[in-house]
Length: 571
Image 1 (cartoon, rainbow, N blue to C red):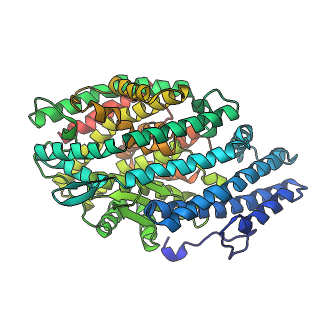
Image 2: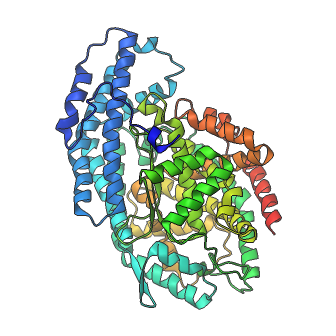
Image 3: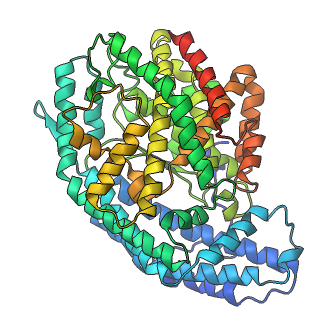
């Protein structure tokens, strides 16, 4: 595939030159769908296709508006365009979506369609109908606009060090420096800067909690957690499975975390391991410096991906040619990183905050996994086929991180490549407890929506201690530790979207295990799974990828043993 071969889907229902500025540009087409008479199964299929096309075009407009305002949070025009969509177009869209869902569900021809082909879609459709409440539309608007405040607040955070202003992602790079006094100073500056907005972010989060709880009550749920399990379509696992995951991480992962941190303390010859000692190289080498410019990051990423599979590299090359990459960290840019699928053009957009670190390489190949997923789904016939769950999406991205280890030669010498792989594997082990902490914290938050800020911070501290190896000494930094959760944008912007990273990480380790045994077969299974989009239930997608959808203690135990063996090879 080349850039010239990438074309927008041909429209069969909407005008080819339709541009959406306001609801009146798209609304009449939704009205036509709502009023269309359907007299056969074939006509119903045509209606589904026309609706899918309309949704894809409007969805892409929304996504571009989101992308632009995250790339430049200071641009008032981008901010206004996004807010206009939320305030003026979103309510109409949500209302008409419910009308069309009802029309489909009530059609006598629905039972004549291929029930296996549409099983996942029809299952989601029923859930959406059950959850929809007119009174939740303005609340959804409020939540989306409030969530935007988090990105603006974090994006504006900078520190000054030795006469230079740094964004927080840029400042975090200094925590890799060998000079411990410098690390301590920068760590305290970063956290002192966060403390300035600690109360305002707590206030913002309290507002979000109350709005979300009201939504749940309106929909007939006693709490927002249970509402979100239904809203997110968690048909293939439940709350008990999440609790099983938390316990498995505590019993099977924390011992390996403790081993890694104790070794770090020993290698650094420290009596006490402090929070500012967690990023520095333990080997005495300078921090890994994989790239210096955006152009270099793209060029080397393409080389890295090509070693795994040429198609993976082609995807990023196309996105680069189309200027669908925004990679560097800068003031006024929203935090975090994402791959945003654009459903009509079928080419995604990658956003991240690179500062020249190994973690940026991990982020780039992670988002490349999402991007490859988007490309593999672009030929699926319906927009809803591409509305994948996070458990599937993150399997794609996290597997890509591991399958591109050989390609790290594009960034490093063999010695540094080995260091990068060790850092990455240790990072997987260390992040799993954090994922469990964030998820367990959210369960408590929304089961106890009327808690105080003090109770919230105390509960966070309690859970953080329960799922920590407690090798790192936080004495003197207790206030920093209480506010650590505010670093996690998912809590503010996409609640309950986080355990998926842990579930998918387990699947990705299994994909990599298969890859090490038979590269060709593993990559083909991976592609086959991603090509399914969300046309099959999650366990079936995982099975197609050649792995189990499982997070039991025994499964986690076996995977941690495998990772320990791989880490031992790095020693």
